[in-house]
Image (cartoon, rainbow, N blue to C red; front, side):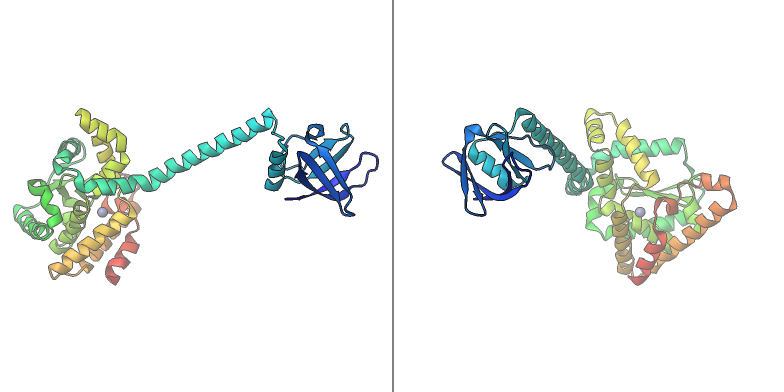
Length: 345
Ligand SMILES: [Zn+2]
């Protein structure tokens, strides 16, 4: 192996292109006219590494030297010569290594958070017993009953009709079977929330009067089919695992559900569901509707009506828009995209 370098003889200022190699513990300097010099390793002083600046190899009592650009080949030549980098350089390199390792660790954690956690939650969710979701869900519902929810004023007859349609939908999906008796449709009113429906991870679905008033029964069932989709695909459980991975697990284990309840509360109200989950629930609803000889268009028109109501509310008054901060539209973004997708389906 030989390396391109410049030779300065220490008497003249001009530089001479040479090639460097190692032979018998000597640095071999070979000029273009084949003139050769062999310098014993012991007589060579190598400059310290400073950024990307060229290194100098001094000899002849430091008068003459060779200047070489930094490269892996130079490192190899120096190693062959037995020249070790100084302590400072080694420390500098070690620091670089430490920083690179830290950056690597940060990258692994970020990737873990972005992809590992959702993946883990998806793998884990089907194995979570529904019963484990009961304390958290009940506590969240209790909290909502005390704060935002009011008793429903929906006529008994209409409730019965909706319950019947809901049961028919739920009966066809075996993935909903583990929810057992917990799978239920519950009626509430919440003027401060606006048109909305929630699926609790233990299988309870809450339909608000504000949503029922806005739609006919078929459209409401289309929205409920979407919520059943969140349950069937265990989105709530997955979300709960993700948003509060460590806190929730520890809390449930320790029997203190308050941390997990808060996480669920936030998830439900802000709809922490990802775009993919919403899409999945829409596809599920479309399939469910088709299975019942109904059109997926029902969900699209339900979405349109809600969007319209949402628009009216936000434009009429500032206060109203604040009051309706949790309706289905604001908790389910990309409505127009979803309507289009359902119609193309
Ligand atoms: Zn949804």
